[in-house]
Image (cartoon, rainbow, N blue to C red; front, side, top):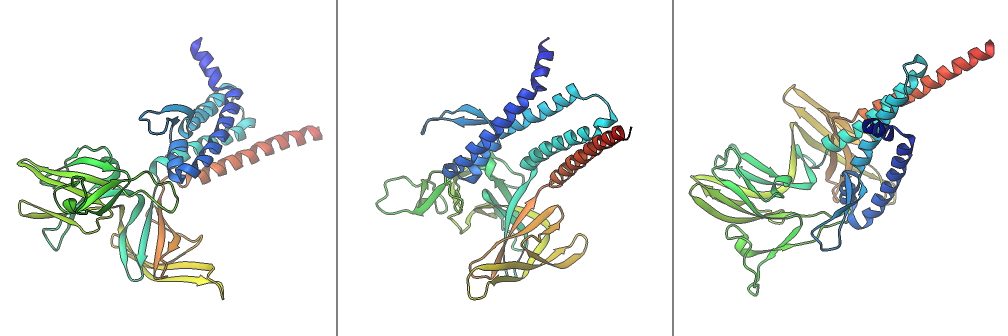
Amino acid sequence: MPLERLFRIFSSLRLTVALLILGMVLVFLGTMAQVSMGLYRAQNEFFRSFFVYWGPPGASWRIPVFPGGYLLGTLMLINLVAAHWRYFRPDWRKSGIVLIHAGLVLLLLGQFATDLLSVESTLHLREGAAKNYSERDRHVELAISDVTDPERERVVAIPHRILARQQEVEAPGLPFRVRILQFHPNAAVSQRTAQSTRPPPANQGFGPQIELIPLPHVTEMNKRDVPAAVIELVTPEGSLGTWVVSEYISQPQTVTVNNRTFTLVMRLQRVYVPWTIRLLDFRHDRYPGTDIPKNFSSRILLTDPRNGTEREVLIYMNNPLRYGGYTYYQASYDPDDRGTVLQVVRNPSWLTPYVACAMVSVGLLLQFSIHLFRFTARLNR
């Protein structure tokens, strides 16, 4: 029967060996591709995808040429479950094997959950400053702030993935719709000269004074893309004009609608938390007589008004702060040694690799002990 034949294929040892070989080839190709693509793009195209695509330079089409990490992981999971279902017979003497297989399944599912749910961001703090948010290094957002009331500011943030769709966005609380006319994953902004023959990219804000120059994708590890967009604000009465938004334009651009004032800023995407981190002191110790870093640490004050928490914590290498599902690692520091850089990680499935490895270890130990007990019993007889 076709279903039985398909089941035998998915549960075969040959498929297991083939998937392991393809996995090793994928790791090799993905590692080599980091030279030209950079780490993050290689991760997305080789390991966080179902297929690896290829196309001629400059072409608008690409074809799948190799299975990606998600596809291989899914097939490995199906192969593991199908093989266990095909060959396993209920017997307490094989309880260790059951535990080993369950640990491997949990390990694969945990890695998939980590890719989908984990969020990494960066917290930059100067001594004495406090923040309740961190920033994602490679994601931006368009922040539209209602600054009419000086005592209270309301912000509507349109994230990177929505800007890239180049569609019209209607957000509650805004008296206008935001139409994304252009989105450039990487672009530079320069001062417009009198000799320029290009038309201005926008007619409001800094648009008539600047030029927008699209740039190729950046692959270097110490650099990143700086996205830019051309947006149009539209009310029921008609268009309010067009604006250019980019991180290169640090000064907010304002627009007034119905006696309400709004600012437009393109910034790194923020991850807000209900507590505050204040940097009390930063230390950067060096080996005597050299500029070689010996240790750097951050003494911070954690304040959570929800439960009245207020405590000092020292964060240094291999000693992170874990609080509220977030982990704060000491990552770097400012060149003048007056500020710290903390890496912030939120990973709801962070415990699954530890549990999976523990299950596999206990399963191996249990299965070895069962065989050892039976072997010893035969010798005694």
